[in-house]
Length: 267
Length: 267
DNA sequence: ACAAAAGTGTTGCTCTTACACCCATGC
DNA sequence: GCATGGGTGTAAGAGCAACACTTTTGT
Image (cartoon, rainbow over all chains, first blue to last red; front, side, top):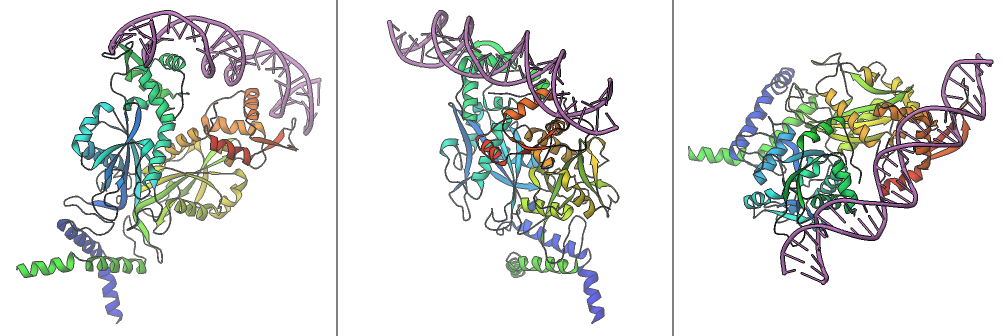
């Protein structure tokens, strides 16, 4: 009896058990086996229990928007949620988030920053899943691409008229909004939401939308121009039914310099 | 041959495989089996591949300090690192961080906030582990308790003279410092580093340390007193070799009100 | 008395705020 | 010519930085 016990220990307690688990996982992967709360995709091995969720912000016609996807399967079928995905073994979590966004929008140079991890034990109904929240800023110029790519399942929503969201995605969205409001006052990341060429008032409306405040036009102009972050590209608006405004673009170099020194926007 | 294949599918592809994995895990748990990068402790089931790491700040004799622990086992034996731990299945990640801190310091009401997740694929040498960073602020009054509890393995270090840290803990520490510098200008969380009663100059020195700047004494007084956050408790310093300073404490009520409205400290 | 830190006063300057007003363009 | 948004001017006042100065206490 004693001999049997130590025999079991030797085999089960040793590395054979690791090999067995790996074999089983490999089999499940090769079959595309999907269990509740777990997801194996052929060829890639995902870390269980950790996901990525992205809050993708856009700015269109003077309004802030968020990109949501419709869930096709499971309990939350036909409900809207944040685009998300899994983390593969060889990827950093930032790279995972980039991949999720690329798959969704076809874009590669999106502004992306991590929010934080969300890990209430019951946030995901089927099993314990911790998610790492990200937020991204997408230029309105690139809207077309995003829409064309996944038109049927992905859609832009006004932030002031969001549908009900699955799981704790409402909380993640609110954290993203909060973070954006903070960051926008420490660095000029708002540029990532505007086209290459923009007017000063478009910029001001962007800040008004993000921060949910009213601003004074003349004062905003002066304050922003004083920072030397904007370049007058010598062009003007066309086909507008009022005096054409100067178009500006954003001086990358000055931004980099200021960012290193650290600076603050107060509005 | 076809029959054999479908037989395997039936059993391996079905829920039996889940039961098998569970059985193996249970056996490993019951044996206290520890593999590289995995850790099972009897009775509790931890989520693999996700850990907690805490940057614990203190303020003592006018200097910022960080609590580090010495690693007792493995490759990183005798090196210093951030205190950390695992997340149990039933706990929120915030609760896990609280537990880690309680086990380390014996304190329960510590100021604690999540930083972000760190997930470079090779940040942990043995296996892929994502860690969720936290930072905590501990009052100097409570130092004694912390020191007594784990004197041999835990020690306070001046932030300006940290030893080499294991893995990516240096990066986590720097993120914590950055976050603290940001947060301290948006909310008066610095109070969590000071004793109940403190002088205005102690408060100023705290800000100077955290933000790494020099400030003007008279101007700091006026600015801070104007916020109405401090309560003059009518006491004075004792046994000091110069004019005794008034002692203040922090008005919780005003803080709560201001926090809801949102406010900013500029220094 | 003097060292050392507490605490007050003052002044010039910058930045902010609020609002009045002129400019260009399409209908 | 008038509506719409673009853009400049200005004046009052708040806030801030810098530094000189007075007060209190222990040795």
